[in-house]
Length: 318
Ligand code: 8YV
Image 1 (cartoon, protein in one colour):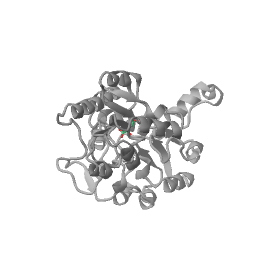
Image 2 (image 1 turned 60 degrees about the vertical axis):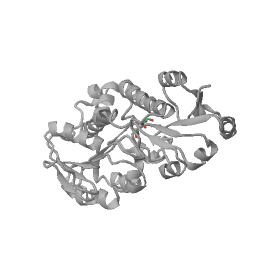
Image 3 (image 1 turned 180 degrees about the horizontal axis):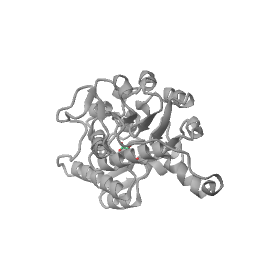
Image 4 (image 1 turned 90 degrees about the vertical axis):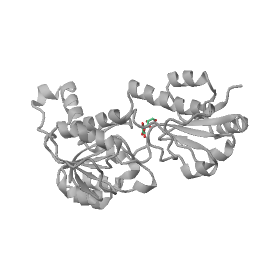
């Protein structure tokens, strides 16, 4: 009999197909209501040995308690802030994620958002499509990206990949993190985003989510940015004081923003929709076919390694 696998969040068909060769799939995300979900958990209580989840879905202690035979929670994504790792540890459940395979993709989106926000690329596109080019003439002038001072909040894998790209734009780079990193002498270090903010023209948030970074980019940071600064976030909505960001946008102190992540996705604060100088993305930075296939493959390798009693390729709990 194949081991049971609870699919907590929707996955592409190619992943479900590959996973079904090895596991008996329980499509939790597709259960129509709470009662159907409960019934699925009850039916799989003795047979479900693994959970496949996603960054934005996670797995809480109640889910773990409902499935006492679970040995592994594999996250389809690098961020596992919604997985209760201490609860998993306490129950002897392993947790894995998909680092590295999405780093360059997210960094591409970060640069894309920065350019789209500063150069107003979506608005220029609309200007051509709606006939404004013909009726109103030239598009209003925008602002430069290359050569501007970039501040990166969190110089981890993704932040470093953004910095490498930004170097090609001849941008002086600063970063904030709890400790100075070795091997990056060309970058200026600040202990907090608030200390860094006055020294940058573009602030890029790429810190991991979770309790340790909740509200890290606080009101003091946002208020310390120079007038007209550009603000981008490709990490988690929780890292930013969203109310402070909205206030700065309303006051016109932030020149433009490029945002891939928000609080309460996908039911985001509608105030964001009103700003013509904000470029929005639906948490899509890792969302290419190539990268999603690589993420799915790595998640599967982790699940299979656990079933085979082999070392896990990318555990987060060690
Ligand atoms: C999502 C992400 O997980 O890796 C992360 O932490 O935020 C994304 O890659 C992705 O949307 C898959 O659900």
